[in-house]
Image 1 (cartoon, rainbow, N blue to C red):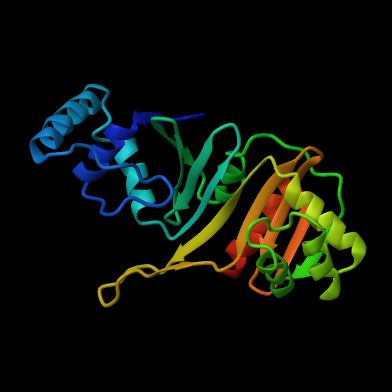
Image 2 (tube, rainbow, N blue to C red; image 1 turned 90 degrees about the vertical axis):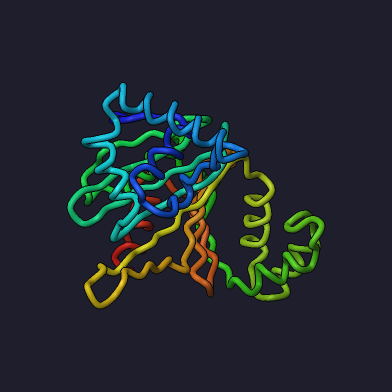
Length: 251
């Protein structure tokens, strides 16, 4: 259930009004107004509209402060029927899910322990793919891509490079078929932050491991690149959530 929805313009001015600093990726929206006078006029209109709806005080500003200074967050970007942009964040005691769709930014209060499931639920529904799991050294995949920059994973050239570098014929064929049949997809990222003290500012650290999902005509797959290996496996929501949880535990 969405607790609050505001326009992208209202979000721009509300964030500024609350003096929350830089907007968090990927729910940052463009700044409005081409001149100072135009921005001043837009600010007044937006804040008046928010005040009329009771959104300048209370729960919404509280949730935005969690987004501004979380101890942990999980973000997602992608494309399905349209762009996917979402951020689940927690300050250790409460959580919030923010999403951007068209010109609307929505916020939902969530348990601080449910970031993973909340962010995975932003994706469109999808069943696990029917293919098999594959793990390939990242360097081998990169060689295949570099071997044909104009059409990576496009024909037998990439398959030959993969096989010459130790990938089985079956896995090479499966990998290329998956790459060529993607119809939608996206990725998740995990960021953690140390708590600020009187002696030290909070420092944010983003996990180097990226979790990617993509759909083909046969279902959904999870791809994880940990810097050394690229692993691809059929995946539903539970498997994707479990993999994100592993990243959170390792952070």
